[in-house]
Amino acid sequence: MKFNWLSWSLAVAMLLALGIPASVQAAAPKMSKKELEQGKSIYFNRCAGCHGTLRKGATGPNIADKKMLKKSITKLEKTIFEGTDAGMPGWGATGEMTRSETKLMARYLQNPVPIPPEMGMKDIRKTHKLIVPVNQRLAKPEHNRNIDNYMGVILRDVGKGAVIDGDSKELVGVVNTGFAVHIFRASSSGRYFYTVGRDGKVNLIDLYTDKPKVVAEVKACADARSIDVSKYNGPKGNFVDKLAVIGCYWPPQMVIVDGETLEPLKIISTRSMTYDTNEYHPEPRVAAIVASHHDSEWVVAIKETGMVWLVDYSDLGNLKITQIAAERFLHDGGLDATGRYFLVAANMRDQIVVIDTKEKKFVTKFETGIKPHPGRGANWNDPKYGPVTATTHLGEGLVTVYGSDPEGNPQNAWKVLRQGETAGPGLFVKTHPNSPHVWADNTISKEGDTNKQVCVFKKADFQKKANCFKVADRGRVVHFEYNKEGTEVWTSVWHNKGEIVIFDDKTLKVKKRITGDWLHTPTGKWNVYNTVNDIY
Ligand code: DHE
Image 1: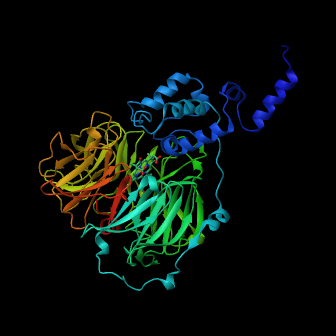
Image 2: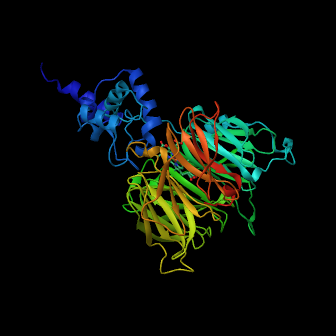
């Protein structure tokens, strides 16, 4: 066949106009429209969280088509099916992808990255529903239950959330939430729960009604993981429950909404430059958010640019943001016991970053182990070192403990003081000021039944190896939450036939197993009082 310059140049020009490099397009395996749609959906559900919507990498590496075309389809299939030692789940091995889906995904990754649409105010407003206006809501609870000890529980794969009475252990109600709902947050008054789903849908759940009731909803993003409420009450005004902020993964933005109606008020784009090389990033996702105890600010971790933004919500018309250079790629984190320092994981740099929310500046960063993943972390008083905080790790079965009291114990502050082995890589660590123990899960461990175990350290006698024991015969055990008093620990058996296992925190004996057809794929749990007061 004769080489035709004209058609070649036209083809290249077309690809360039579409933003697709000619070399990539030429080698990408052919896929039907249906297959591409299927790949897109699997990618969104299983891969985007770690690798990014644009596949540029974050917790997981860059897997854009250009890089994927350098690997063989067989190698890609093997990685997707079996996972990696660096912490990537084996999607075939866990039963979440079939052989044919793994094959499809290998081909999908060698195709160009589709760019999802933006979501502006007009789109978001269309999704806003005020189901019960504020003036038609109850003035006081219509039940005698103890709302402070309510537990919000995610029922992940059915897009629902359950509210359980922490005193009686009875199910108070189940509400429909967003798809694969990710976290609950209690409002600062403790009257409402907010939920945010992986589809960017936010629900406001009123806890005053007999059965918890969704009183407003909005879809602020196409993909989201975080939400928090305004907590400030001081000279600038009373902002308790007044505003909430939703952290989007896609589009890369945060959306400020009215805290009691979810009416969208302002969108702030996070597209900006990386903290170190000052290069433009098209997809800086919003990771953890906490409300400052010191000012009218949300502390917002921007993953890809490695910045922590302090967003002052006191005057939305003249919005002030303090941009603090931190580290890449920021993920989850929480406050120290005093509420002053924000400790956030830069999990691809194996570091914890410390931000002073009072002085509004970067303090330090230090290595803790392979891919720290603290959840919100765990704070306690170590008998030798004073106030400390801890994290688990995605890349190894390790709990690392560091000093977090620069005022009282400056010699230990932000230094790794203790390390203890768990049964395998995990996701969450938790404690309570009234507890003698620190709990860690092993959820992403691949060895035998270790992901069905929980591990416990004693605060008074922190050993190099935790006391680990099996609590489930199916699924994986994930996440902990304490009751308000700090006497019980609740953990989830993440399975279609899920369970909440409640331990007596002193004796480590199972106190109760909550089961039921409604308890489908429970993951995170939040106690109202502990969440309002940042007790962890
Ligand atoms: Fe999470 C917290 C992102 C996978 C359960 N998760 C967070 C936070 C972020 C995040 C940014 C911090 C929110 C905050 O505090 O404001 N999570 C991501 C991901 O990007 C990731 C790695 C992949 C994904 O595609 O979503 C991911 N997370 C998971 C899970 O697979 C878990 C176990 C079950 C699920 O929901 O899919 C899970 N993430 C949680 C939980 C928290 C969380 C329970 C809150 C912990 C807490 O105690 O507050």
